[in-house]
Length: 262
Image 1 (cartoon, one colour):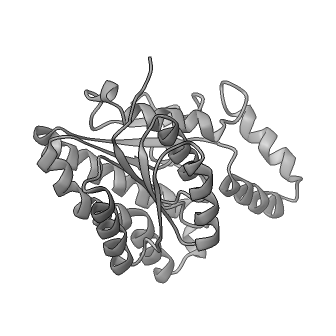
Image 2 (cartoon, one colour):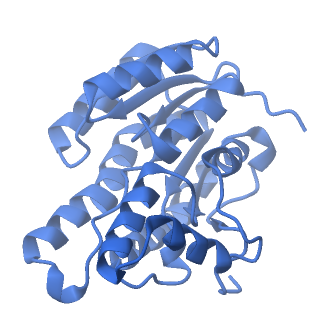
């Protein structure tokens, strides 16, 4: 099956590294033009150059997704540059790790703004164009913590579930307009964020970081971690015409680790 996104325009958030960058690369290789955002201007410029090498048009917009004003700027720039946006990949990284006792009220409110409200507010601004053209794809990068909570990640376990509930409800509202919305849940994937989590666990438990990675792999039926490209392949499929009837779902890309049957 060949996926052809030529002529489509996609906004990919958190696209300077990790799963966001991998998703942007996958979309570019399928022919989609891109608007990418991240907080670091330097990293964003590097990512834009790599994506342009795939032969597509790329607009980089430095954005702090916890700022409604900067979300306004991002959405406005995307719509002005391409006229419409066909694909939105909501991705804002993960809230910091910690237990309930570790985290303050400010930590909770910051995580809500980063993880939930960034997706809500950017979708609010780009959805009208998708509805008007009766074609759109909204993909939220979440975590398998929505399938099976992860110890020490209480913010992620809690607030990412809110993203899933929002998306499932929104799917009923936008379905008649042929706008398709889904959530994609990475498991243990070889990104910088996973390295940071490994360092935290290693320090806490007094073990080597490579042992943390081995322990994670042992919990996956495939006995290995995913590559970012393997995750991105699912994002690209969900962005395509071929996925037009996959709607309102929450898909784990975790090698079978999650034991949930749904």
